[in-house]
Image (cartoon, rainbow over all chains, first blue to last red; front, side):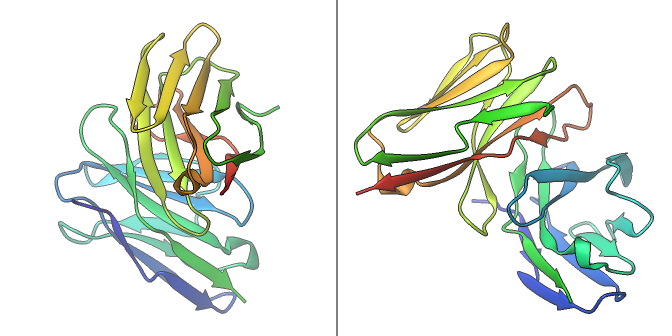
Length: 113
Length: 112
């Protein structure tokens, strides 16, 4: 069964460092998303990506964040200068056409120290 | 106040018992999605509801959408330990890109 895969599963980084979280969405999907979940809190929408550009973003998704689809398969989230409060589980999701369900990856646990 | 309220926040039931989890939206919704999350893991899609009165089932889990009340209920029949986890409802509020707003979740524990 096709699935969304994320790497790494866990990343520890020093405050101020740049991190890139990687995702391989399901191959024929067209919409891609990043969400995050701070420990013990809700899953929060960060950004959606369609047709090679950002289609919507939340207030959380500030200039520190960027997304890219560098080739036909990968979808990345970059955090330029990490802060302690960026520590969270980051989920990638992808969706086919129409308002069908989104499929989520297993997440990357980011710990900023 | 929250856009999306889930109740209860947590639930402990004896194996074999039935249970219901609710999700209520304060705004008009255009689609409601139920997911299950095990601690520290990804979200597993359960069901999607889009029309008022719609009801869907997956194994022993049934979900209904009451469009008038902007509410959905998720019902588990004869609960099993494998049903344990966090149940999340996510709502599309009309964004064309389909991004979801999630509730805080209901943590379900099933005692054998």
